[in-house]
Image 1 (cartoon, rainbow, N blue to C red):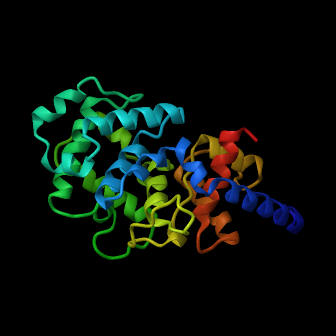
Image 2 (image 1 turned 180 degrees about the vertical axis):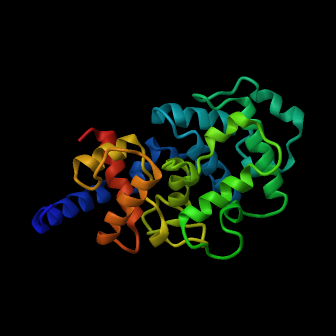
Length: 256
């Protein structure tokens, strides 16, 4: 890619950022789920479930999250802290793609244990001090989430870089919780990581767009490719490479 071509591409993507990084974008995206809440812990829990279920059509994702939160009386933090086993019976028929009641019950058990010890989900990723990288935070979270006995099937719903997963959904959650550029989309609630350290969420759609634009050498959605893409984007915005997620995801959704 020549300097002229790179300059044109950056200008093009910067324009797409302006198009998608605004409140009008929220209503049709899974981030609309945590935006229903004001309390920090409610935002975290709703965001965690929205990111976990962010698989498939966005309307289906939003509908599944809405159904789940209605079962929690639209007060997820209170429900997580105080629910009893019988309160989970209403979710025996809950499913989103391959995420089923077994997975949901383990997620609720994990969150209850965590929030009874901590007032923020951030400490599940960052243990009280800044971490060196997103990779370290994701590995720590995965190990923490699956400490003790757990259903083996649920492991596929919490990714880790150690398996070379792109960890798209967790990287998306971190983007939501860490970035705060005043545009009213991301929340900026967590301080254990800086926006400069974020890894751009990468799924098959973003990988396809990024390869077509010359930002990725191979159309592959894995951890190595996520780092490769992020390092390219850091050339343009070293302080905030994940902002280009708006442009790349938006292009994938729009089919441009």
